[in-house]
Length: 173
Ligand SMILES: CC(C)(COP(=O)(O)OP(=O)(O)OC[C@H]1O[C@@H](n2cnc3c(N)ncnc32)[C@H](O)[C@@H]1OP(=O)(O)O)[C@@H](O)C(=O)NCCC(=O)NCCS
Image (cartoon, rainbow, N blue to C red):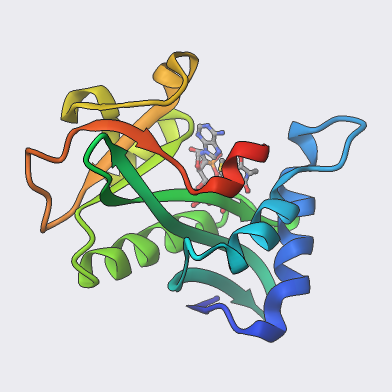
């Protein structure tokens, strides 16, 4: 399995990855994540260097991206990590973990200070995420608090605090 950056020719395969990965979260409905990625690409918040795919036997089986987010009120730039998806047929083989390590390493190399996400504490703690409240970062919606996590990178500064604001396309979720 190889990890590489997304290319324009990968877009439809990435859509299929998220449709399949997130299907169990949307019984009887279409998952929102394929459209979210399509809406993020032209939004100005998309960061091509932080949109990574996992390829196994020539097939795209996983995708993750980090997009530009801010901390209010100062609008300090940070990253929002979402979505992360692995095709159901390829889960539990380390693909998600490989994508997470790769995107965090790339974000660190780009001098990004902080990555924020909504997800299960059990899964993301292994990648260095901890409750975002511990670094003074609050969610837009207080109901997210139990799942709201942050990972500081090398150029993190403790004054990076405030209310987290995802890129605009997340508002439509
Ligand atoms: C979450 C996801 C990306 C993990 O991908 P993966 O390739 O299976 O991950 P890995 O193989 O690196 O790690 C698997 C381990 O992660 C843990 N794990 C996976 N999903 C988890 C969850 N929802 N809660 C807690 N732990 C979880 C388990 O410990 C699992 O170990 P196991 O294989 O022994 O059961 C994948 O399950 C997925 O695409 N899920 C649907 C989409 C989703 O919920 N994305 C995350 C929110 S944006």
